[in-house]
Length: 400
Ligand code: AAL
Figure 1 (cartoon, helix red, strand yellow):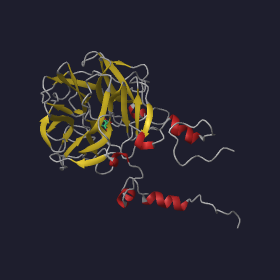
Figure 2: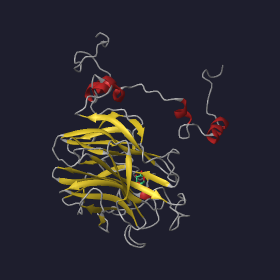
Figure 3: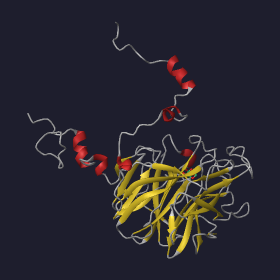
Figure 4: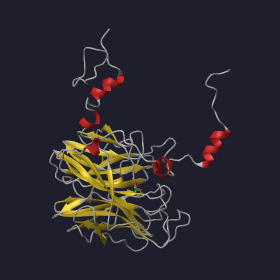
């Protein structure tokens, strides 16, 4: 009989005793110090922004990665200012949006400290009705390439329908303030009819990696999503020029989960934060080659639609340093696509250059009573009734 597992955690995987599957994983996948010893683990701490507070009729969402140019921070995001709230695809008109990101433009805001932001106005100009991208420009992200600025974004030429079908286009500028000139055509098109990304190219996220532009995106088959079709996955398209041509990786999709895109160069590879959807939701993953991602940590309350501050997004140093903060959005009513969203700041500890504060590493987080009984978590009345009516419960001790 070997002795019981020791209280003092062996730093090396023990070879002189049997190990359960879980304890094998502790050494093979994780590490003996758990989250504290895991460079890919962080809690996320949130702060409301000043200068971009919630206002009726104004929605701000899907922020880009944050840039810092000459000491000033820049962010680009979807901004919708319509008199009517979103009414769904059937009731949408030229002035009534169908979704929160319909009839929107890409706006820019700047900041001196990352907490207080000043809205600068639209960064892109939508063309007249009928032309490419006239209906909505949204969900941007930014690339700096050969000293020029390139905004990638979703361009809709029709009312946004249930499938949310759209390509991605790009607009360029000599300065981060703009004006950005739109290319007027897609740069990444949805795939062929039965491909995983046949309807939507969403959430473009460019990095410079291995000398090229790597544009990550969320693809989807639109309305065909669900059932036998792929639900949430992300891929990458690679180019030598921001205006394309972009070649999709034959390995796509390169993630099997995740709603919006959030990536950063890390060590020799790329790290990704995947939130909300899929079997590997709410994980940080790492791919040493930028393509083959493995789960590295499980996280709680990750930012939604995160736009991280990635100082070395375009450095292509082969020695990525990580992230410590960014902006994200919150859907104040718990996620309806028909409601105004707000931008917020998240802080985290996913950088190789910063000693983590214990708040970012602690486990055993408990949430107050409002969390459990808010709409998204509370058992709705109707469901409670049907659970009671057709109860499947049986006696614990049958026949007594
Ligand atoms: C977001 C993003 C894309 C979708 C919509 C607006 O969270 O995934 O931008 O199209 O929702």
